[in-house]
Image (cartoon, rainbow, N blue to C red; front, side, top):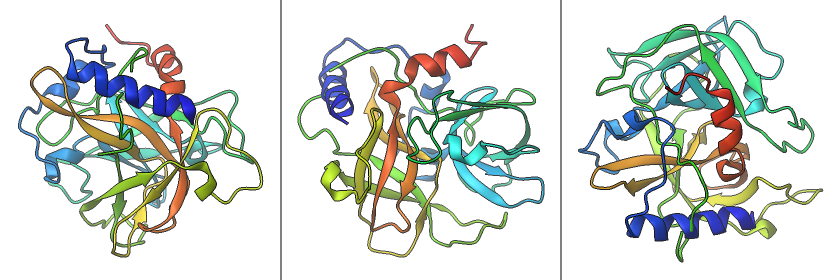
Length: 260
């Protein structure tokens, strides 16, 4: 948790000056006309289904053939597919991809959800357009200013239906990172962050979905991912855990093999 706050403090400082961190995929900067809550802000969203069409979890497109999600979403599962396209399952430009392979962190712990991170390798590349773009993954180590959690959000849905007929995504602000607000029998492990979501309406956050914020990268605004929703957050006014990507950027790079 401490490393996450240091990372955000580093990032704010870096982005306010000209020392910009490298990106996993530069095409996350394709859309230079982002507004906070317009549809384009969720063009990186992926929804993960089993072979029966049941919605299992959320995820994020991070590269042409790779979707990032929580390990718990894909552990022991086969015959998965994802739907991409602006966060809306019914978007006319939606793109489905079957999953060739799943990658789960070798130290993932089912009991306390430590290292709750995984990657889906898609059967073929995704062609980016206005509705389908990767989210920015910042690489390296940086410094991020006061008010570390300011601007962080997660993505939820207004209904708890698990069918393919979904509704538009909701952007849910995360306001707190005090580990004492999480009721747990065991302490947080390295790489886990406790947060409180605050949205005065009934909804449910996507497990495996992103914890993200808008950043100004040189000139374009872009959405950058800082975490993965892991547990809790049974509604959009609740407490839960997310996995801190700061601890796993090298693991992500090592498993996204076609970065050229």
